[in-house]
Amino acid sequence: MPSSNLNEKWLVVINPNAGKGKGKKDWHKISGLLEKEGIQYEPVFTERRRHAIELTHTFIDKGFRKIIVVGGDGTMNEVVNGVFNQKNVSVSKIILGMITVGTGNDWGRMFGIPTDYAKAVSILKKCTTFMQDAGTVKYYHGEKNESRYFINIAGLGFDAQVVKKTNRQKDKGRKGVFLYFWNILTNLLFYKFTITEIIVDGQRITNETFTISLGIGKYTGGGMMQTPNAIPDDGLFDLTIIKKMRRGEIILSLKRLYNGTILDHPKVESYTGKKITIDSEPKIHLEVDGESLGHSPIEFDIVPKSVQIVTAYDNK
Image 1 (spheres, helix red, strand yellow):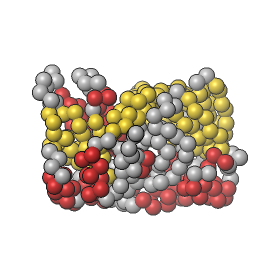
Image 2 (cartoon, helix red, strand yellow):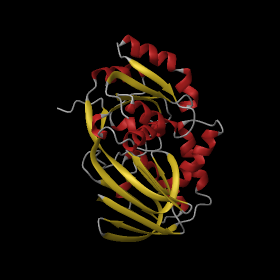
Image 3 (cartoon, one colour):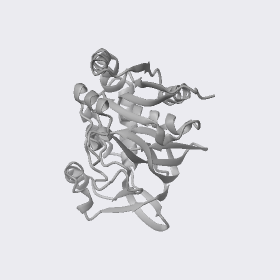
Image 4 (cartoon, one colour):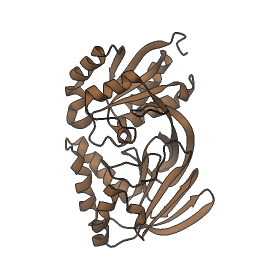
């Protein structure tokens, strides 16, 4: 049963392994800044993958309505799933803030959240909030049908392959923002294209596909813009399809992912929609918010203006 007493403290969910162990190493500095600003909080540390989902659910039931994530985009994703998976409190009543200690800061970049801890805590103290969209994705993991919520970007095909390899290397202790970029280059040597059938709000699109990005936010991979026109509260996904290209053409086009001109490439298509389904031959793999999941067939749905987050920007 949920607690009848609301807790005015912030729940702080800390991933000690985020950012080469910065979550653990820098916690004393972050906690000191929170105390200096007079922010009351209850800290909890994650111990394994998906633990933040459980912790969030548990502490919402205890009366917490404000949550700070100290970690990366993957930790934020888990907290968001914990918020959605509990049924005792309306999702929109929970406030989510972030102090990023990860390497990418892609979700935070969208909302002006700095990597400087003191500045991030100052933003939390001001607590200007914004209602952003969320997405749901249904996918397969082997023969099992599973689902997940996300608030930034989903990647399929080559992008998912790169994330999967990067996450494996992170689990072995390798870190850094350039790790993702290096894996883009090395995975080009063996990645195979897929024939995809995509349906966007009833419109059917068939392509030989290299990679697909489906965004609520615009940044991924440490600052790449695969969905550069994404608006986080317009009730629509932005879909970018990069079609089959030669390896050299792909390498020459990488700069477009950083300067926001990827949609100008003749072998790139873009769409917006509320409901998107994707199937492929062979199966295409999936990642959301930097977390490797399963494979096609895949179905996406938008949940408009459902997540209340702390932003650096004045909404007036």
